Image (tube, rainbow, N blue to C red; front, side, top):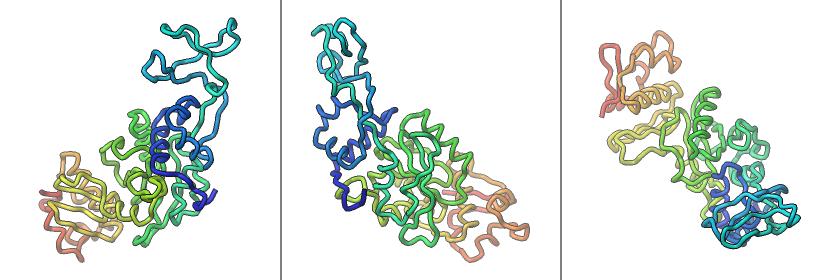
Length: 316
């Protein structure tokens, strides 16, 4: 499957997001053909949806407000079906016993085919069916490659906790981009240190709503995804922080680590930090014992960081 063979419009991309947010990542044949026949055909032809035998639920259009109902075996009727209080026994057609399942490895390869990310076709599973590691991708305007994860189901509180645990057991040394298959509105707003969580729909090629655009992703990562109305907004790697509308940029990895530490303290509601601890955690040597030394080539840091009596903090 190549980028040129991708035949997915925006509505088909919306269907991907809808299915990706379900616990199983599946959709019944009846629901697909009833509600999404055109989009379903696109995804099936692209190899992104494949039939899985053994489905035992269909969508009832009689009693249950289009909700799935479980099928049961009836020896009397020699087949699967369900009992409707309004219509009696309803036998399921053979097609209704088929469900379609998203093919996540194909989805990942296609979604990232526009990035300089050669290992996207061989993602490493971190949480089965939910989280994958893509290795490093090169984004426009960034000297270093950026590690990328792809996730689904982050709107589910249990999955979100699993994801956060994984970020702690596999911490990011700097910036890590996490692309979400689900919609932007479903993403938690909680900050995760070192991680920029971005919905694919927000950085996708406008023609498909699914193919990630490298320039759009690079811009999103550089600017950060925080609440624009908040007094302090930081890009995930600490390279850019905006305070009261004023933007400050830092390039050194240790300086970025200091900014991340201070931002996370400010964001937690306990902004005051030990300067010694902040510098040690950032990897500075003992000779660098003040922020003045750490930021010796940056004069503007004092505009939003206060350092006194062995402590430091972001002040707004």
